Amino acid sequence: MIKPPIAAVHLSRRSAGAGYRSCCRSVRCRSQPRLWIPRRSRQGSTGLSSVQLLERAALAAAATSQTKVCTGHYTCIKMVGHTSVLSETKTGEMALLRQDEGMEQWTAVDGSAQTLQRRNGSDAVLPGTPGQGNLNSPTYNLLDGLPTDPEALLKHISDDAEENHGAGSESTTGPHQRAFVTIGDLLRTGGTPPDTTAALYRAAALIPGVDIVPDAVDAAGRHGVAVARTHDGERIEWIFDESTVRLLDERTVLVEDNAWGKAGTVVTSVALIDSGIVDEAGQTN
Image (cartoon, rainbow, N blue to C red):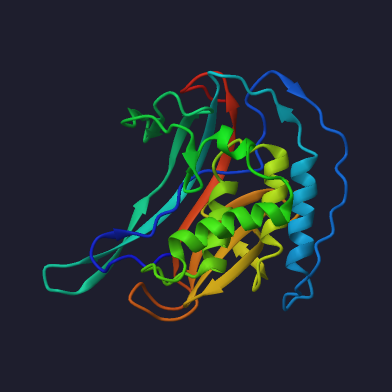
């Protein structure tokens, strides 16, 4: 995760999600997925391999029914949680402020229409249109066009991370952590195609330093097991339901004391409540 400037800067993530259930009526079923075995595996302190958990998540995603997506459809997401702002007070001290990230959002699958957000019961249309999008702000169509071979997908993501966050940039995140963060963001964008979701999990299994957190709690109070990667005193966690292997939340936890708080502080946590594909903006399940 990129370190923000000290005053009034958000440690935010795009609030979205994967592991969706369809909001549309037109669905076709997928055949049972083929088992994909990564070239290497890492064991967490509990003995559970991060690669095993990610492969379980990939198989579950690949077996998910595929919604028929057409022009004019929208991805929909509903989430709860918070991000944080580090702000300077009148006395010159730094204060950590939480910002509510609870909302629903509808984004056109092809990026041709404006995005609708609903917060606290009030609707707002975001200015401009998403267009095709990019890895930092993708549309469904962009996600659907990504490579589904895990190694090719990781190279695509890593090349983008190296270009924007590698040597010569001001980023201290590093390409491996940036790739892990990018994959987590893509998994939470809402209505991600099953093949893409499976490939993203398998691509994450190839990143060095990914481990297991045996018990983590999401922003909705749900317990799960997390896949995590630590960098520069912060641990990025993807929390999964232990039974269904559905992605529940992505959160950032401090593992060292710093300006953002004491070790153990949850700086950001955004939980996915629901997501899918709908016929029009504002439609809910």
